[in-house]
Amino acid sequence: MPNHISSEKRVRQDKKRQAYNRFYKVMAKRAIKDVVSATTYSDAEQKLRRASEVLDRIADRGIIHKNYAANHKSKLAAHVNKLKKAA
Image (cartoon, rainbow, N blue to C red; front, side, top):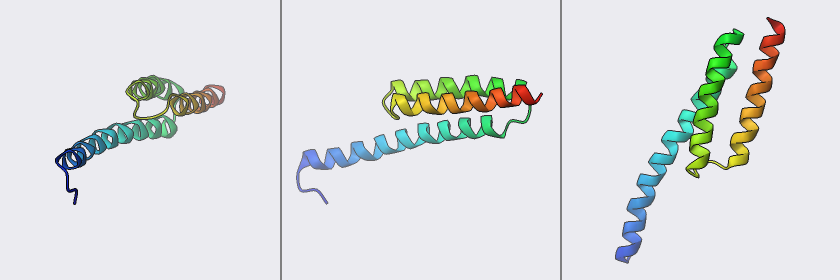
């Protein structure tokens, strides 16, 4: 346990921040899974828009790195384009 008041406060803040970050990271992972699990092009396209919004939002907040978001958006777009060609 911390010995200083400021250290105790830091522990409290870290717990809150960890829960906040975990919530948004799980939201992003679910959005990514939704796109990958989509079977039709139109459904995948809608879910890709939603996933892109989520990834951009959490990248802006600093929860994930902006390149991480960009890489995932690119991979998901390639996946959706494969569905389009298959249809």
